Amino acid sequence: MNKTVEINITKTTTSKLQETDFDNLTFGHILSDHMFVVDYADGDWQMPRIVPYAPLTINPANATLHYGQSIFEGLKAYKNEHGEIIVFRPDANHRRLNESGKRMCIPELPEELFMEGMSQLLDLDREWVPSKPGCSLYIRPFIFATDEFLGIRPSFKYKFMILTSPVGNYYSKPVSVKVETHYSRAIEGGTGFAKAAGNYAGSLYPALQAQKQGYDQLLWTDGKTHQHIEESGTMNVMFVINGTLVTAPTNTGTILKGITRDSILTLAQEMGMPLEERFLGVNELQECLENGSLQEAFGTGTAATVAHIQRINVNDKDYQLPEKSSDAFSNRVLKKLDAIKYGLEEDTRGWIRKY
Image: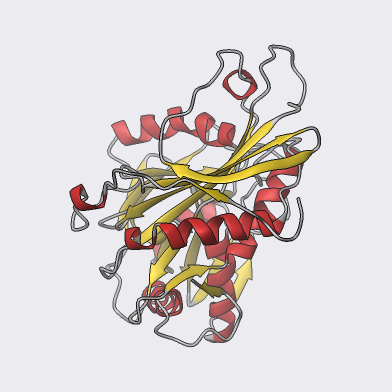
């Protein structure tokens, strides 16, 4: 793929904009008018194009359907008060996509193809970016194998696509979670650090069991001992204990290197918040809940940004967390992060791109 990306554009003749209720956006249910598509074959990415959003025709022998060779990313576009479109840290998403791809034997995607495809797609569908506070345009880049072959080996052909979807808040209220000590999300040497489709498929059954018991999500523990907290559902998780921010390290290969996580840790240091990247033990968590030293718990991720946790179940016992004040760290860092994303605060870190 050359540095100059020429993208063929076919515009839709029937936009869905007028029939979309932007005051009632359910996460991921509404897709914008167009999608970016490019194919990999014969050792190169070929035929980049933007076409009207439409179903794909898939051969029943498609490799992804059988062996799950698929990865994805998630990021958001925002509209500032001047009507400009702002995307938060897309370079980090591109890097992570390729890190996931390496683990799943998927060829590297050039940065200019990722960036230019997203840029032209956003420009074409810029009216789909909500202007209502708290809303955004969710961007879903993904790659999947397209070989038509039932043998087990890395595919020779792939398809990279970008879809966009106008969204509101992922969680409308604080969430309840349960510490999971039987099922495992990831194990060292596995694919826990990658945004691989199979990781999420494997988490559905345990999460469903927790939801049947009245919890929104799980607090995943390590796959070896189930004694250390790793993630919260599909998010990284953070705790404020006696005024110190505590979150699990990502060097074990079992935890996704969240871009929101990294952004919050950067802001926490700038805000003078004491920080510890270490594993929080399940027993320590329960002790902190019982003695009141756990002041805050929240998940972090692209979809939710910051999801406050109000109830935690540890060893079959429920604990209610205190209500968050406006000056709680999670509220202050969320406010600061949103100000950067919506262009209300100067970006001094090179995190945003305007379109």
